[in-house]
Image 1 (tube, rainbow, N blue to C red):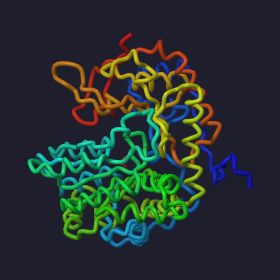
Image 2: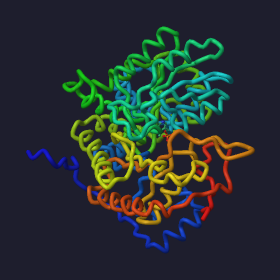
Image 3: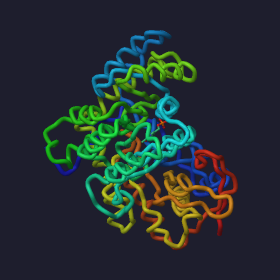
Image 4: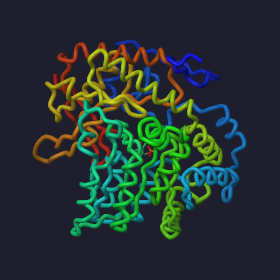
Length: 458
Ligand SMILES: *Cc1c(COP(=O)(O)O)cnc(C)c1O
C-alpha cells in the first residue's frame, strides 16, 4: 500500500451542502454580528473552523446506535452500555453522564472547590477557568515555559511545569483542592502532555495528598502523540495508552463533543463514591436523573460508540496528519503558527503576524475577522478577548499569546477544503500590514468573547 498519501479512512455516506455567501454578504454579516464571529449564522460561513466541539460527522454505527437508544427515564439500557464503555476506557468506577463538558466541571468544582482555593493546571480551558472562578477560586496556569513560545519546537509542549506545581502545592498559605491537567492542552495550542509528565503530577499529588483530575476531552489525540513521540509507547495501542493516562488520575471531566465523536454529551468520572454521591445530587438538580444526565438515551449510544471508534489507529493517524498538513502548507508560505501542530487545530500566531496591533486592540480577533472576510473561513480568537483581564481604568491585561485557532471538525472536511483554507490564510497573511485592530463596545462579566460586540478602529 502506498504510504505517502494518508487517505481519509472513511467514505462519504450522506452529504450536506455548503453555503457560498459572496463578499458583500460576508461584509454585511460581519456588521450585523458586530465583528464577533460567534454571531454569524451557519449559512454565512463557507468553511467552519470555529470549533471541533460537537461539529464532527457521526459514523453509520453511531447513527444505528441512535435507533436502538433506550429512553427509559431510570435505568436505561443505553446508560449501561455507556457506563460499561467509559469504565473499560478510564478504569474509573463512578460514571456520571452530563450534557457536555462544562456541566461536569460545574458539578465537580461545586463539590471540590471553595473561595480562596487555588486550582493549578497546565492551561485551564475557558469553561474550566470560568467555572473555577465562579467558585471564587483561582485557576492557575502552570504550563512549562516553552509551551508559551509558539515557534519553539518540542514534542510535549502541553506538559505542566512540575517545579512550579511543587511550589504551588508547598505554599501552605493556600488550599489546593485538586490538581488538573488538560490533555491535549487546548488553549495552549492543542499541545500534548507526555506520560512522564502525568506520572510526575501523580507523584506530586501523592506527596501532598491532593486528588488529580484530568480534563480529558482530547484523550485519544493525546494518546496518539504519546505513541508516536514518547519512548516506550510505539508498540502500544491507543487504548492501552489512554488507559494508562487515566490510571494516573483520580477522576476526569470530559466533553464527548471532542474525542467522543458525538454532537452532544460529556461525563464526569471518579473513583471516590462519596464525591460521586455529592455530584449526583447536584446532577439531579440541574441535569437530570443519574442514568441520563441531561442526555437522551440515543445520545448515550452515540457517545459510547464514538469512544470506541476514536481509538482506531487509522483514524488517529489520519486525524493528526490532516491537521499537520494544513500547518505545513501555511508555514511553507511563511505564516507563523504554533509549532509543532497540535491535535485538533492549527493556531496562527497573530502577535508575530500583526506586530503593529497591540494586545488591547485584539490582533487575533482582527485576523480572524479577515479570514472570514477573505474566504468565509471562520476561526476563533484565543488571545486577549478570550483570556485578557478587563481593567476599570485602562486597557485589558493581555493574555500570554494572541492566537487564531482553526479547529478541524472530525471526519468532516476533505483535503480540498483544507487546501482552500490554506489559500485563504496565505492570502490574508500577504496583506497583514494593512489590517487594523478593534475596540470592545459591549461585554459580559464571564466568557465575554461569546457575546461581546466590537467595532473596527480604522
Ligand atoms: C471543550 C472543552 C471543554 C468544555 O466542554 P464543553 O462540552 O464545550 O462544555 C473543557 N475542556 C477542554 C479542554 C475542552 O476542549
